[in-house]
Image (tube, rainbow, N blue to C red; front, side, top):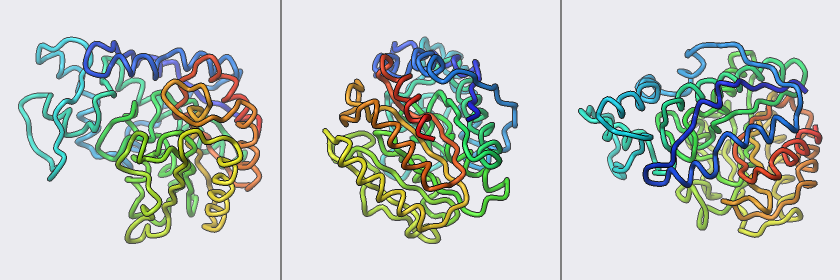
Length: 333
């Protein structure tokens, strides 16, 4: 299996000096990368496919904001990382501001996702890494993209959940541009991929299925319930399978079987897997109880469906086990 990674994805280095930045720095840090790289062996750097694939998913105004936000934060005389702290919970609409603080609240949905000096560079190359895997997955049947920062919480015009650009959505649009008829995205991170769901909620050509912690108890709370099935042309193309804290392999296996049966029934010709290893029992911010050997079973079950598949890295924060968990998942393919 060809694997892709770019060293510029290390540039995102939050300091943890403001609001929940310390929590972020303790979880989504660069040590995750080394743990995975040590376990998967040879990786290839992506080529630069430019901004156009990103613009198919994200608004121009949001991309401009994300690229310039930290510089504007510093120009305003602020130190450390940029964080939102005021949010338009009703009547969110495009507005002009004379302070970066307003834009941060307009485009961000939590206080645990800092924009640091190297955030844009890392997010950009994370997306390029995802794009690099699309054609090999189509041609060879499998590819893995080590995406960091992760992407599945980012919407078309918002960031949060440690995510800035939605790598799965960008890859899905690229697959369609490469002649795929219908794409399915399977999200097996502990947390619901609210950004991915939001981007495709009214679309019928990209289906989304997610197995995740019950949003009644876990982040991101406001999305991920079973009654969210899509709308308009996307009605019936969205499946949420929330599970309770303490879930072990037997319960997870049943949900995975149901998700794969649902995906197969839609007849996609390309599959993207948003893989998170934060379902492991020792993960510091999650509450399922999967074991390392279970990840091989997850990989095997997904692979057995026979779809060409691009595997993208999302969460997973127990560094001591992360490499082994990712390696087991990939070995299932």
